[in-house]
Amino acid sequence: MLTSSPRVAPFLFALFRRLLSLFCVLLGVSLITFAMTYFAPGDKAAAIAHARYPDVQAFPPEILEGIREEFSLNEPFFVQFFQWLFRFFQGEFGNSFASNTPVWDIFVGNVTETLSLTATALLIGLLAAFALSSVAVWRPGSLFDRTAVALASIGAAMPNYWLGLLLILLFAAHLNWLPAYGSGSPEHLVLPAITLAFWITASQTRLLRAFFLEAKSAPFVETLRLRGVSESEIFWRHILRHAAIPALTMIGLDIASLLEGTVIVELTFARGGIGSLLAGSVLSRDYPMILFLVMFSALVYVFINSLIELVQDALDPRISFLKPPKHDRSTEARS
Amino acid sequence: MTFQTQAGFSEETDLKKTKHGKDLNRFLFRLGTMVLCVLAVAVTGFLLSPYAPNSPDFLNRLSPPSQAHWLGTDQLGRDVATRLLYGGIWSIGLAFLITFAGAVMGTMIGLVAGHFGRVTDVALMRVTDSFFAFPELVAAVTIAGVLGPNTANMVFALILVGWMKFARLVRSLGIDLVHRDFVVQARLNGLPSTLILWRHILPNIGPSLLVLWTNAWSRSILSISGLSFLGFGVQPPNAEWGAMLLDGKAYMQTAPYLMIFPGLAILSCVLAINLAGDRLRDLLGSNAVGTEK
Image (cartoon, rainbow over all chains, first blue to last red; front, side, top):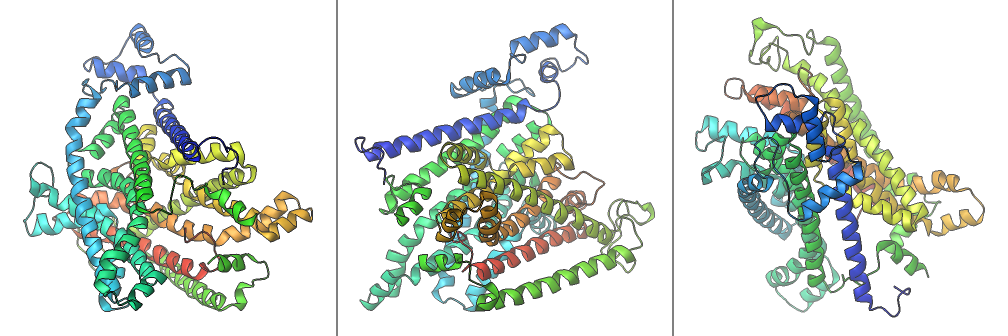
């Protein structure tokens, strides 16, 4: 174990280590994000000037130089980077080049659409995955089980933009039940949410089924069975809890894919939201907006995964802050 | 479990003599036959198709599937079946290239991190974690879009966001391996590091790497088509499957076959690679370390 620090309380030491690595990752994330826009080709001063005076075609060099001074575009990379970083963490995200309104206001105006879409999709997807996998493991190898596995395989290979198009073709173009494009009403949410949820269901069904099966054959379940505990009680009280821990990790990873999915789904269904905002600002080279959105999606990922580690900690007494990192374990086993 | 994985490491384990080895050989034989069949069909298609993928034919615009055009023609009168064939080269080939580059890059970073340990290891792994924090498609759209949407920039973007899984896997497997008895013995015998790497480390990492790579390959096909569908990847008039879907989207009502066939192509291709990868993982499972993690 952590022999190097006999005096420091090991918990604090481990906590410090976690926080330090979190800090490093956050710094790395910001560095990569900033580099994405810094190394972009094209004159940024011209882009800012065009955003300010949309009617003017060509700008005299003095004006461009003035803008470079104002936004300190002449400074070296790291000076610009830290200037941006400090402003970012003070909540000054700047104005969008495209509309000259604060980035934060545009973001707030779009985030609810994305949130409602992802939350609905996550809810539908997880419920469906839970139902499918729990029924499937009731009799492994049965027709239902095999159908569920086949569906999950197809779902994992399904391009969600194509699924979206197929749903539009069927439910909007042919049956005329639901609106195809746009957003606003709950009806507009149905098709995009199903498109996103389908993918979540596919990946989670597969995993949950594997976790349930693994838990079902675990020695403690055998013991419970021999003691005469009923199957349903075993499932609801023990297997579910046992499978929740690995499942939670996978859901955390899925959140990142969910962010990816919203980009595609929002553009396929011509909805507003973070994804279509990102695509739009990338095409118009709206750097403040791009910086904010990319940083936001990475921070969401880091935050959710840290949160899940904490929850795992609470759920499973075997996982703890005190556990040495992976490479220490192998040496420990040997000595 | 520990016993099994340890047994898998011993050099004397000859794959071909075990039952798993037989299953593996049979599987590889079947897979090879199937791939050859598909390739044969594709090559026949290339040779026999009377159409070029990008030459328009304005007299036959948007004609439904017929004997002359098996899968119909698109809005410029180009033969969809021919375009699907050429699109396969783009989608599958580019994905192969991207994941191969990512695997090489990730393996090198993982090996360096595992070999030098300490500060190098911590620094490289934090870099890996930082890259991991970006949702793949968000980063790819941003990089490809900011550099200018075209095929080369998309390939660059996807390589940049795809190497981390390989680095993590190789590092953790490498660190596990370095402490195994046969590697320790090899070192005590005075074998140089490079020889240990080629003879002991890489062959033992290989199977897990292969499984991860098939997984990455199929995902990459989805990413390429997705980016092209969004307009950030392969640009028209090139016949990439995602780009064909984008073309067909506008004619959804009048010519639904324009978007059905490219989608089916993506789905079946990704499904096939996934299934082969799953089977490979099951067959290599007892010998590959780390796949269960």
